[in-house]
Length: 324
Image (cartoon, rainbow, N blue to C red; front, side, top):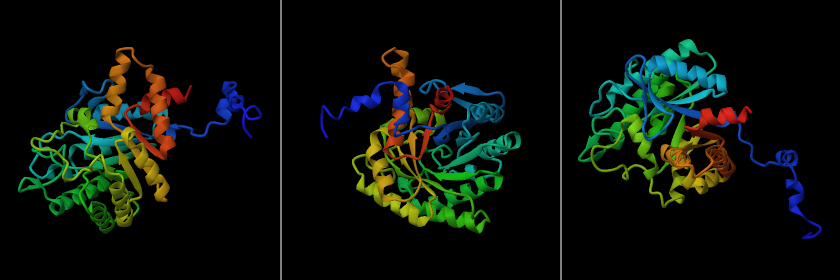
């Protein structure tokens, strides 16, 4: 039937009917909050390009996690700023490294929280790249060994999940093998499977102090123009043992999220990254947009595209909105 028998506005008449037929519903259970842990005590360093976010010392990150849990956010993604760096990122493989200390401290104080440890080397290397440099580029296979050692260390100290973000070929298989051999067969892997070489990461590099000292990451992160390649990356990670696959960033890659959901029978995560966050914050500060409405619309669009899990710096704010 067509107009006038069919009038779609009938089901938009008031909030009750609009809520009743809502197709995509955002839940606090969909959200993961990224956090940055740094050395020291009582440290709460504001991240200038990401208003409301901080580099937090271990004691402060425990308190932050308590607040998140009270708001209903039960999962965090941890990044570390170490006391010192080295050429290979070996510093991140020690059970007493910065992220490992944070995991132990959080688990000691909070029972009902799920900790995901990001696995990469960019925060831990002197050059800011995601692995060992040979002849001016990241050596894929040497880097795999460091990543595997990180994963096992995170598992030993109590991480609930590991999330390799480096984009090395074969990293999921190498990490899965190391975890299984270490007795951690039940520890899941969330792979940054389609991680693009994006301009949206700028504020994160301030937050994690991870900007490369030379060149860029185009030889290992994906070309933003490619989506077929993303399907190949995702398929390979699943074959290697990934339990969850991720598309990063989210907003400019909603089509990739949708393709991933349509093509693979596996949970899909999407990372609403720092640049996406900071653009909203900057526009809101100038009074150009309604921040709360924009944020809810953005996150709903990411879920509508097919994401089961959304990693976002808006998680705490959205949890408060959803509770109203």
